[in-house]
View 1 (cartoon, rainbow, N blue to C red):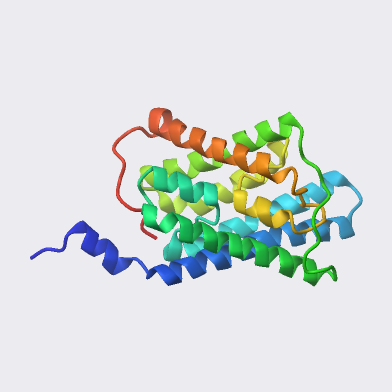
View 2 (view 1 turned 90 degrees about the vertical axis):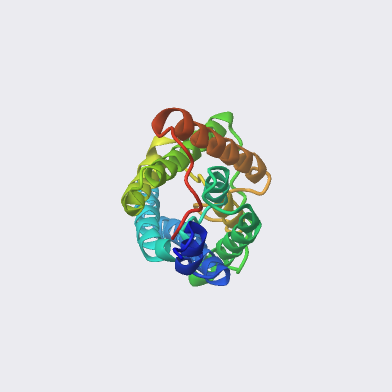
Length: 239
């Protein structure tokens, strides 16, 4: 008797606890990199452009490496908006959405704490950087829509091996091409609230940022389904 596709998936996919641990670890490293590189940038230079460049390069490079390392374990989603988009595209089981997002959020919080402590700050310092302008919210919609579209398109075309090479440069460029500097991630938005530093965001600004990111994720899914890579949806995302 030949194995059914679901049997093959079950045999090749790491257990859920290992995938959740990978999501938490990767989110922690990503969140810590974003915040720590922002702090380091302000220590190195007083030029805001140079600071943003340092932050962007560090984030894009970290994303590339993390996806390469953790992709075979959990898919390296590292982003609640990406997890939700993959679930909407029937590539992540619905029952795994909440545990995965919880693991990501835990990682982002711990990453922020570690970044703060590395530079001699308090473990948690609530950000005072208000980011409330409508243009910034539009930037978050655009940034997240593009990120989701990149990932879903490559998955739909069977080109998952290209995701690290595409996502890292995309985020690096989006830092400069969007007004919001491309948070594009509800989880990292939560983490950034916990650091009153270059990359921080005030708690009162975060809810609208997260709404904009989720809206962008919806737009990204629709872009792929209707324009970029229309066709039947495949089964669950396999690491």
